[in-house]
Length: 172
Image (cartoon, rainbow, N blue to C red; front, side, top):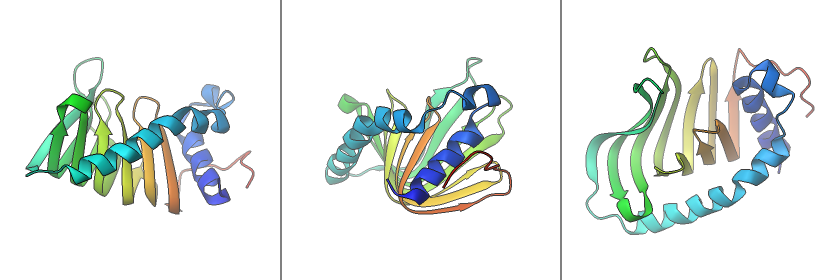
């Protein structure tokens, strides 16, 4: 893995974890743990893209709820097609949002197209995407994400703009 991707993953991991969890986070283990799901979703993205047949337009898909029932994650798709048998949703012109308990947007991701597994709450974005987490903006291509694990891997063309990530203890 190249240094910019490692730096991004480390920065995201540090910003997403509490101080107590930081000492237990192992980037190599996390990356390895998600590798097979990432490969599966890359393949599913291609399969779903080739099977598109009159996708629905302008829909919102809830992905995950908070324990109190309020929406935690949803997806707005300019175009979407459900593949019920596989528990997948292909989305085009996508905006993914994660909300706190008060309904405030914590994370926002915009992409041309993605596939999301509704069972695992993970997904793959083949092309370029733009994301925002707090005061951090991230752009890149080839993105795997897992909402329950709060894990994001950006494969190429990574750009980070931030004013609230501390790089203490991160070696590049």
